[in-house]
Image (tube, rainbow, N blue to C red; front, side):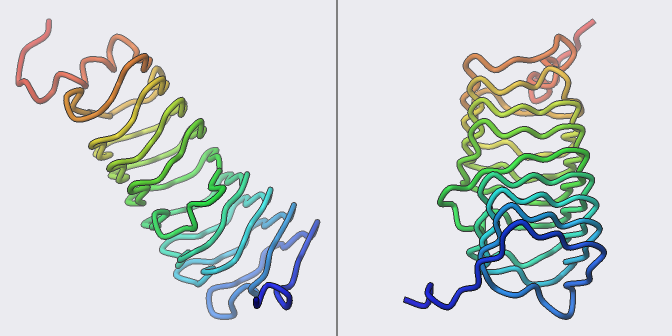
Length: 193
């Protein structure tokens, strides 16, 4: 297998680097930090990131076909229009803090127990996504699409601007605020006073 000659990069820090035209070297990155790097419209396909942190990075419209993310944290990063559904779904696990994820897609992924904290998630695609026990903490979910999702035990209590159809998603034991729960009734065109 070609795995023998894949570089293994561990405990390294990459700061202020531009990977938009000169792509990040293919390899397996473990416990690395990417700080203020740009990957926008770049290519990180077939690269593995394990226990890495991306802070203040721009990964908008990046190609991540068969990219592995295992226990990866994204902070204060731009992740616009990303097809996370093109990732390698084996071992997939990540968390997001203070990120912008507008127009990204998590189609059909298993994202159990993921944390989205203070994220802007306008028109994000969650179709057939398993979000069991996921936390949407102070997230703007305006226009986010929840269809045929497993939302069991999901915490929406501090999320806002979402609407979802309880008949098209599994919502047992999900947590909602009183105001937020009204977003579950939008389709019925009723008045609540």
